[in-house]
Length: 419
Ligand SMILES: Cc1cc2nc3c(=O)[nH]c(=O)nc-3n(C[C@H](O)[C@H](O)[C@H](O)COP(=O)(O)OP(=O)(O)OC[C@H]3O[C@@H](n4cnc5c(N)ncnc54)[C@H](O)[C@@H]3O)c2cc1C
Image 1 (tube, rainbow, N blue to C red):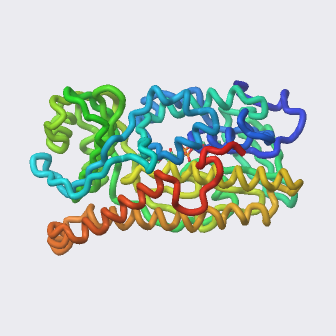
Image 2 (cartoon, helix red, strand yellow):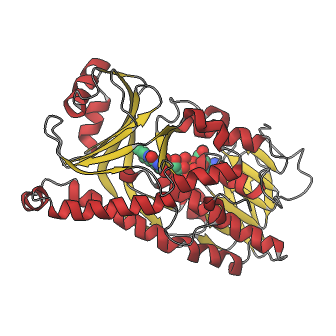
Image 3 (cartoon, rainbow, N blue to C red):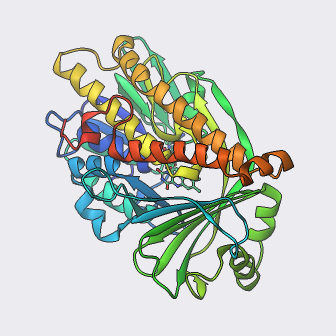
């Protein structure tokens, strides 16, 4: 992988992708990977070198990958590279209790799709980065310019341009911004956000435990937010433990012994003795959706377009939906000889993705507000089970629908078809 592209750059690419993390790499593969029928020429730019992303020190999270996302990975040739790191979710249980000794299960469901395949797999992000990057590096139509941030954007009629901090410029008919929640590209285009931060931090850590989890994922709603125990291969689990921000900072600063003591109080003893199997990370949680997903010569994907509460593990899955819909839109336009960065082409992408995203983001927000709340009246209603079961049934049907890929108009890649 070259750190700069100026010398090898004899012509403009079709697309510049800013961001070489999960969504940027997935976009590169969908647009210019070896499985694309008519690959577009892509340059992927990142301020950092993505070869450093495949470590728990960089990203300690694991992602729930739905069946639709798995089909997309199969279509992009990525799945064989991660399947041996994937843990199938056999069952998901949900409770409304912070007390590990008293957790009546409000809802449980077999995590299988209609054909009996798992509706989701847990995979550590470090393996996802490595697999996506390896596949992208092997693709002749994908080039990288990494280690230098984009310092300037120009969106001109007919052509967009990025200038890197190194001084180099790259031009293309379209920029795809996969540059994360603070997206400088979105800012440069003047696209506003709708949403708000939560007073919650997601503490993420991997634990090893004595007893097998049997593929069971657990989500315990507590007054400070959801506490999720997500199964990983071996007797290990990835935890997403939400706390109010000040409390999270206190917990994150504890030494390992004190941190583990706090954790045991919430985790319980059903999986036997637990120990820390990774460092800990804190992720501030929020809900943001961009007012529009496109601007002249620009399309947003992934966290640049939307940031969700991680309670249902859908953020990256939604990013993959963006990528799949955008790639299909652009490939279709290119096949017709259209300008892929034109307003008419980008309009199709915005219409395809924004409504679905807002609906999912609102559902996640509603769940978080209902459960992460110690309001006495709400607690009374919840304890009667009625509201909770009703809302959780909604979550269940959303997850099942999402996993089966039946929500919205599904892009071909999410059906497992090459484009
Ligand atoms: C606690 C937690 C748990 C989660 N669990 C799940 C889950 O189970 N399932 C799921 O689907 N999702 C989950 N998510 C969401 C998911 O992790 C994110 O949606 C996803 O990682 C976002 O990836 P991205 O590529 O869009 O952005 P990022 O990972 O933020 O990458 C942006 C990239 O852009 C680069 N960049 C930024 N600015 C510039 C610039 N000016 N020039 C050049 N490069 C630039 C950065 O260096 C970076 O590499 C979770 C999120 C959290 C917080």
